[in-house]
Amino acid sequence: MSPSVSRPQQKRPKEPAAPKVPTSLSVARLPEHDLEDDRTYRSMAFTGIDLSNRDAEIADFEGCRLVDTGFAGTRLQRAGFVDVEFERCDLSTMAARMTTVQRSRVSSSRLTGTAWTECAFRDVLFDACRADLAGFRFSTFTGTVFRDCSMPEADFQNADLRGVRFERCDLTRAQFSQAQMDGARFADCTLVGISGVTSLKGATVRSQDAQGLLYVLAGAMGITIEE
Image (cartoon, rainbow, N blue to C red; front, side, top):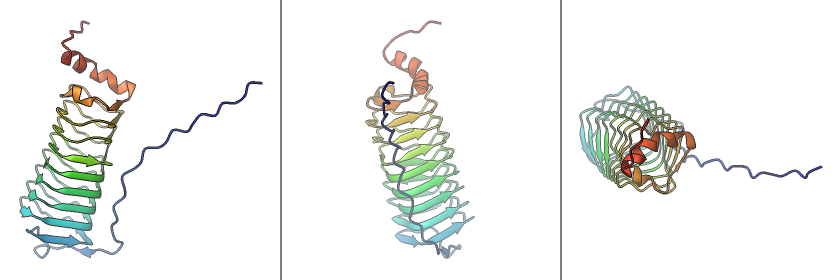
């Protein structure tokens, strides 16, 4: 009788820290709680509120829940989102610069054409979001996960994506030029036509996902593949 061989259990990837949102929240209303410069919104519930096409600098959200809230076309400078839950929010074409997002969750939201430039993301989960043409150039990600997101033509140029996980995401024609990718992981993702494929050095890609990289890698190396 051959001795049994114990196999080491595969360690489950660590999830981003969950937002610490208080149980009791004050109800936000317009115009009293409109988006303004140098203002802090703490322990508040924004539901069905339109904050689109605003201009704000140093606006901070702490311990807030935002549901069906619109930021479309809004421009933020040095804003902060800490312990914030976004659910079914419209962040399309929003432009954020030097903004911090920490211990937050963005779920079932629209980020089409949004631009996060020189921003910092720490312990953030993007879940089931539509983020086509979204831009994250020169941004830094720590402990961040993109899960079940549609992200064709997303732009991560010069971003720090070390340790980031992409799970079941459509990244068709996404841009990764000059990105830092050590420890990044791609699982069950569509990677057809991505740009900056050589920047994926140090990343882990599942075998079935790697098939989509074949033609991109060949093109980067000057190899012609014939049928």
